[in-house]
Amino acid sequence: MKVKIGVSNRHIHLCQDDYEILFGDNKLEKIKDLVQTGEFASNLLVKIQTPKSTIEKVRVLGPIRKYTQVEISKTDCYSLGINPPIRTSGELDDASEITIIGPNGVINKKCAIVANRHLHLNHNERIELGLENIDKISVKVGNEKTAILNDVYIKETPNGVLELHLDTDDANANFLKTGDMAELIY
Image (spheres, helix red, strand yellow):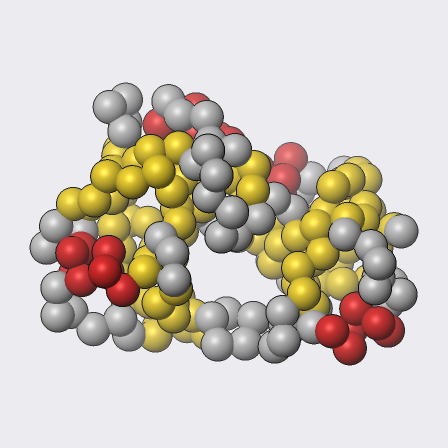
């Protein structure tokens, strides 16, 4: 079975309280829908900072969540001088501390992770693909440079849309871009 790849660049999800500290009354406006139902890239950007370095123009994704989370690549980690864990979104145990700078305020929080590779889908797609009792799979990727990527987590959500999410490091290492196809192996 082939699935479309979505390459995920660094970004941030915010809870309401942190949003208000960073942006005050500024409105979270959608500039682009993402593939996953209800998710969008917003008009807002933040800086993320550690004692070693700063990364400018990190996109805020919407909608507002119950938690604040900064998703970065391992390459970003080297630049920032931190070593966050590889986690599923929302699993912030042992997350690295990072400073988030917005136009109205600053937050220091243990919320930086490297997102694991994951396959978005809904319950019906999970059944159709025969993945009911499977938590992780492998995928074959690449055109010019093929590879097998292991430890791809299954991420079922009620409105999930079938799509493989890779970070920029996985994508760059295999000459991949959003819209390329991967083959599921399980």
